[in-house]
Length: 356
Image (cartoon, rainbow, N blue to C red; front, side, top):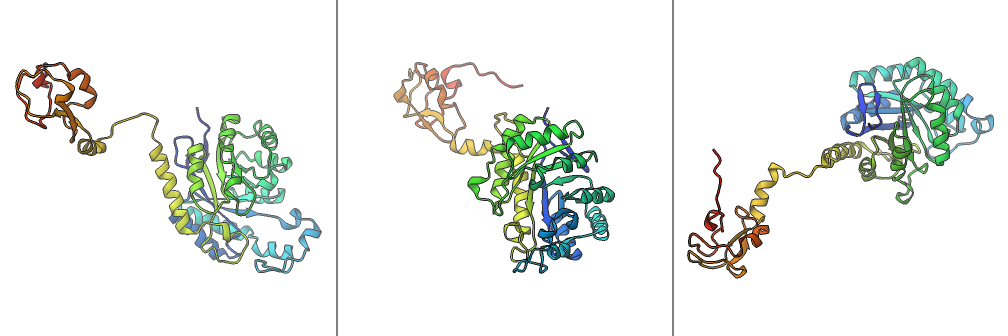
């Protein structure tokens, strides 16, 4: 039985559509209204979830990092602390956004970057939790979030397989609602560094865990490749305009890209089928037109004992199939045939059973 994960009402498993997370992060630029626009656009594009990032900046960063100069074109403050505080939403914004997401019918959750943020999200009653790649080795945070007994989606960028195994061993006794995302922690990520086959490795080593991809590459094709390899969760950064101010916009999808990615993922699930080879009803007219049948190569009188020279293959394919050639050679015609006329079983004297 394949791994399964339920987030809100959506069941994620091998036979399901891919669960698509529009990672908004800080692309809202500190604006509640802009964030709502992103939620609405993500829903219109077919995403299942939207995600933010929650930080308690004073608890998260050292004083040196918090006070470090951060004055450049993508900065929202003169220091890194000012920049981060400008982009940080509090309880009012999170409750507004949760209500708005419920009205839209899209799932909303966030990444917890520290223990106070985990508690904050628990108070908001998030339906799931994300752990960022940078916290793959932060076992105290991971175990703390695991005890909330909500689905956990963990990115594994810049980590080793040993790191991932350590996380699994720590969480499994506490919470089995788990998804590992293969991730390359560069922004954007080069295609040759995506390592998509790690998805197969995760599925083999952790059969009870849903595998997915946090995709930082430019484009949408790798999401489809990941789905074919077994990924059933795709996280992709999302923006309204890649030219907007901020560090993440340049490698984010705009609405047209997200819409196409969701469309292609759904088509991929449909296209994969179940492994059984079939002849579909819609193929029959094409086969009739392009296929071949056995016909008389020239006028043949009654009583002719057929040789290979008496028979040829021609379209349409509405008669005896060419693979029957060896069974036809040596048989005697019971009726005369004109050139190009189908060689039927009745013409060979074979008994043809009627269908009542």
